Image 1 (spheres, helix red, strand yellow):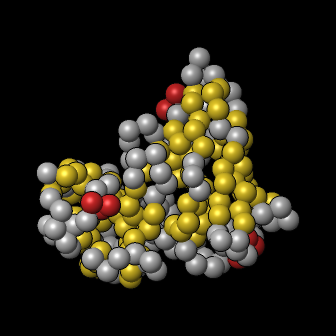
Image 2 (cartoon, chains in turn yellow, red):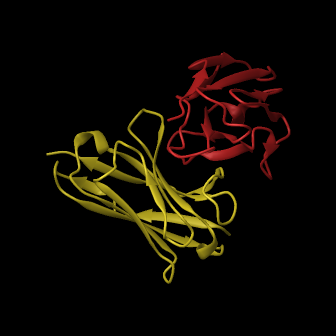
Image 3 (cartoon, chains in turn purple, green):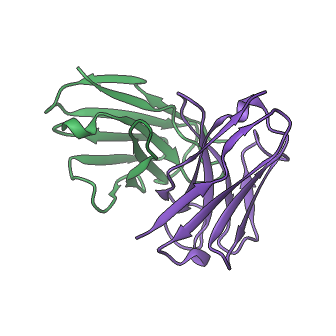
Amino acid sequence: QVQLVESGGGVVPPGRSLRLSCAASGFSFTSYALHWVRQAPGKGLEWVAVISYDGRNNYYADSVKGRFTISRDNSKNTLFLQMNSLSTGDTAVYYCARAGDVYGFSYWFDPWGQGSLVTVSS
Amino acid sequence: DIQMTQSPFTLSASVGDSVTITCRASQSVSTWVAWYQQKPGKAPKVLIYKASSLESGVPSRFSGSGSGTEFTLTISSLQPDDFATYYCQQYNRAPYSFGQGTNLEIK
């Protein structure tokens, strides 16, 4: 079945870096755009970034632009989120999610991974 | 950027009731709206996409409508499993914004 599994979360001091991974299986990885979405404790959903199916295009939320980098390795069916200059405001569960249909960006998100908790704290 | 304003923030209802959640976009998003259900500690799950298309496997008591800037999610004959938080989302263009969420609780 279609599955996304995040890893790499943990506790990190402010100003440091962390890289999240999202391993995909059960579908044609190279045909779908992929997103990162985060959810701070007790808060709503915030879209973070998207990368095209071929890795050539991406977009970011203003809140992470210049600090976070989304990338993918299509040979390993894996999505990444490199997070630099982390602050306490970045504390959240980070979900990866697949676009609902092939090739384009503008589709609903389905499915989602189970999430990976990132805690930025000294 | 497109803002999605969702209401109400909290909704109290009983099993068997019908409820409606509303989402307003700050500019037209055509029908590029999805609705998600999220339960505590779990990832969101899509219910409705393209404003009114029911995701496969989702019960038919869930329905969506709207276009342009006004959208609704209706749940008819509430079941115990439906008490959760619901989010609307526009995917017309990046940044792909979500509504603030509606917490549907048992009365």
